[in-house]
Image (cartoon, rainbow, N blue to C red; front, side, top):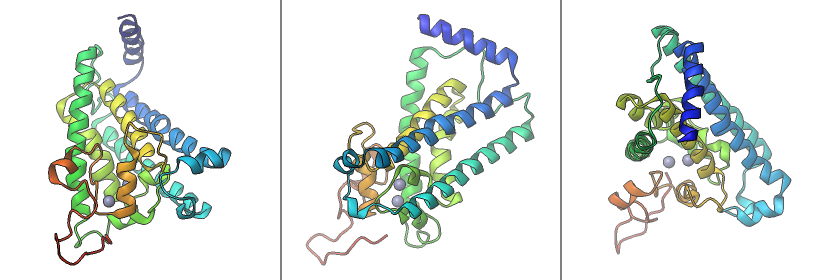
Length: 261
Ligand SMILES: [Zn+2]
Ligand SMILES: [Zn+2]
């Protein structure tokens, strides 16, 4: 209760002092930095500062890890995508005017119950949206044009989470995380907290480390290694569609087809 009233006081002083569009844009910049760029940098630094610990906890072997040059290239593309989504967001706010916001910045902060409800709603909505968008990107007729780029890193590193074609970045990374809560009219603080969590989750999922059991990094790591498995994020949609095991698409008892997309 004390924390809730403290948060309310802080939120009131922010909303009375700054314009809504400005709050939304600055919040997004801070979310990208604290939710993704700093955690991804920390994961990368573990490799450099603690190589023995790193090798012990990497899901895939040391010989399969990307080179320094590949990692730097990955970081550049990842940062470009962050800048792209911020620019689009900034442009949309410019169009509606900075006296308005796209997210609900109500003066009253949400209750804990609403906050938790929003979180689980967004988690499920993201799983459903991401699963179908991601699986569609794996369709042989479009795979080579967009999603193949994200699969460049068979052994992923944290920054590889955002290593993607710009179209994929918007359709698979940004919209499944943000759109459901925006459409629901959830409070801006719920959106900020969820996006921060999801960005960290994406970095953790691609970090290549096995010590994060929540989120289950092994699921997505295996997707990068074997391609046609684990299209979702939390395992739910893969369980429903039976795409949670390697070889689900191979004819039973027939000739074994190698997954290569
Ligand atoms: Zn994929
Ligand atoms: Zn990935």
